[in-house]
Amino acid sequence: MQILKTIEELQDIRKNINSNVGFIPTMGALHDGHISLIKKARLENEIVVVSIFVNPTQFLLGEDLNTYPRKDEADKKICELCKVDYLFMPEISTMYSEEEILIKAPNKSYILEGLARPGHFDGVLQVVLKLFGIVQPTNAYFGKKDAQQLSLITQMVKNLFLPINIIPCEIVRENDGLAMSSRNVYLNNEQRSDALLLSKSLYLAASLVAKNEKNTSILTNKISEMMKNLNVEYIAIVDREFNEIETIELDNTIILIVVRFEQTRLLDNIWI
Amino acid sequence: MQILKTIEELQDIRKNINSNVGFIPTMGALHDGHISLIKKARLENEIVVVSIFVNPTQFLLGEDLNTYPRKDEADKKICELCKVDYLFMPEISTMYSEEEILIKAPNKSYILEGLARPGHFDGVLQVVLKLFGIVQPTNAYFGKKDAQQLSLITQMVKNLFLPINIIPCEIVRENDGLAMSSRNVYLNNEQRSDALLLSKSLYLAASLVAKNEKNTSILTNKISEMMKNLNVEYIAIVDREFNEIETIELDNTIILIVVRFEQTRLLDNIWI
Image (tube, rainbow over all chains, first blue to last red; front, side, top):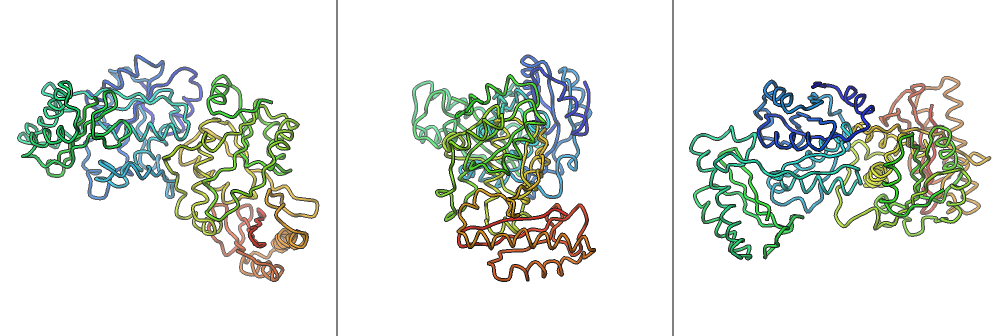
């Protein structure tokens, strides 16, 4: 595995690759969720590139940019073990200049995460577009956990006609059901235990749907009831394009929950 | 020459090209300025792609979107004669969907053309990025006449680390000095004659610089004096990054003029 710090190094290498390139952009603090993306990419591509870059433009003022978990040495080991070919770890000053062309997520993205974190997705799209420019991947892998992000990146690639396949990957969970997240380390024991209600309530909702309950208000109420002791930020039932829906559409629905534990926001969702 | 209407056709062709691709994006109504770009591309690339697309998102409300000169048949002939390989002529509905990721030119672009036409450059960058996504050119050719546009496109490519060379091309002029523009057809005889003052005053300024006049206020006044009977929108002397300067910097200066003839804005500039 080669670790690259500069864009020029990576571009020079990329120029001479004619086979498929699989790409997993990350902010590091790699967990089994990331590893599942890397493994999938490893199976599907001749060359696998991982980037680790805690992107400042997607953090809002007051968010956890400075405390975001960093585990560079462990991350390198993980990538090495997963047989990554190139690990790209640029500095902020490598990725950004003083004045930048900006990317604006569409107005309709200002719901759910876009509403809770205004400008967040502009930063996500900006850094992903930069990374796509550098890596020129054939296939790029994103987890379904950040469902709205995945939807917007898919839209960006479509809008800009980039010759890149966006590959959505399943959520990976701890044994007890908690969705993997680099931010789970922020939780204390009590919060960690309460956090199980996210996946549990999603599973409940899915089982009700399986029993033919299609009314999204009823489902939302059931989830809400189960989470009544938590600081729920939102429960949403949307189609794959993030329009709110009144009736579950099989193979076209996502149920999303966000719960806040002090400063930590935990996201989970289930695709139906 | 193959004429393509859909993105899929062009993408399919592009996939199988491994040699250099030169690209000239245009809004059609091709004149000798465009032809010089095409000829340059023809010399420097195995494959040459021209696009003709009157991009609605770069026109402001009340501008000449609906009356912009269209000469599809003549344009096809010109491209054929210039040995273009692929002429891409998409419809608006091919290029745009209902909801779009937007590109925002940086705040510092809201001067000169950016100030006169707020939002114009956002539309330019959006369509250029789309076209770059489709064509994946090695080299893309732009005239120096739209100097601020050229500067912003260069910045976008740099910001997004696109593996594309932006090739600035010299302004082509009529025999009497008028810079070629598709909008010159809007001028009546008197205006056409008055319009000669643009290039004449730029040449005057350049000759003064050659005689060691470096003070930009003095130069601006000289130009201004020569144009006193015209409706001058702005005269600006900037460095290549469009910062206004007080003293001419050789090989790093652009002098720009915009004059309005009724609804028609004529641009000209000279690079020093």
